[in-house]
Length: 143
Image (cartoon, one colour):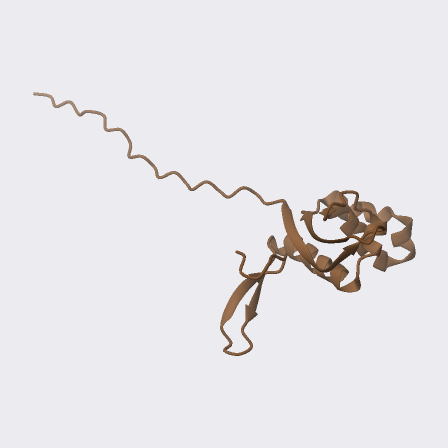
């Protein structure tokens, strides 16, 4: 007497969770705001991730060759998608930002292109409790 073994289907493999879509644009809120030629203050904006081209092209710019500090201006002008309703963000716009806003955007650029996010670890000065905050902006109480 021969026994015939029935084929047992393989156990289903748990599917790996879907990876989160890659985030390429980051919203921000400037500490002071960009004041356009009409006197309108623009505070919110969007910065995109930099490409290798974004970091290489400014190195050929004569303004950067004459003054290495100008690299920040040209680079930010390439990756800022908009500031308020201003969608033509060029070096002249970045030049007219307040110094605190320029520093904020430099830090944001570093965070999203090096660390991949805009969160920073902080601690309460009163109790020392640690937590993270999103430095890209937003109103108090928003998540």
